[in-house]
Length: 143
Image (cartoon, rainbow, N blue to C red; front, side):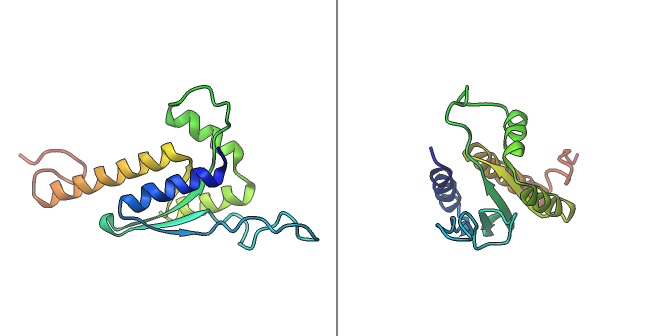
């Protein structure tokens, strides 16, 4: 599967969950002196996604796993290490800047997109329970 196929699936998932997806991937310039360059600033992720329902926005750098990936479902830390090795230096710098400023950034494939949606839903559920007076922000029950 190509990275563009993975990106299409991620985009469809995000839209299905109410996300507004901005695709910043523009492909490569063919031939000539600038062959292989993009029209974007180096390091800028492929997607910027607004999730109005959850009041969150996320930068998403799409990576595809190798076609000969040994397992269908590999644990998140193993996938994260794998995808980090695929990051270009400019992408790693952009990620570090996001994390230092508290901006959400995700690096990965479809599995990470599903995990992101689960995290957003869980966070929203915790906020609702907190507002209802059932739990504190740290998740402990209010007696």
